[in-house]
Image (tube, rainbow, N blue to C red):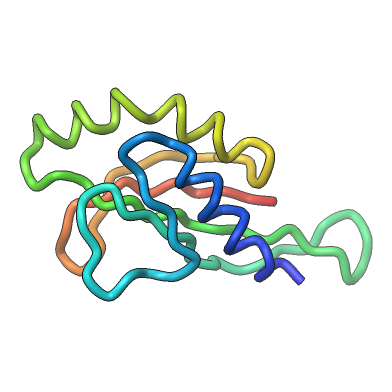
Length: 108
């Protein structure tokens, strides 16, 4: 089952300096904290075979310049660290409980 990917995703995120990966959202999340959210599954080549999708949430600094600096310093390392676990399809800005966040849409 795909939910077993949570921990490997968290561990891969923690390999990036300034990022702390969690299997689930931490109670008191802060800048650099990251966790996967399961986004669903779509059918693949054969019946019963699914591709699971994840959205990885990474909290960012509050100010725009700080957000861009944080992303610029880590985006390539994040994608490289996640490559053995998931494929990153899209990177977008977003919010998590009204806090600025980087959203990485991924698939297995």
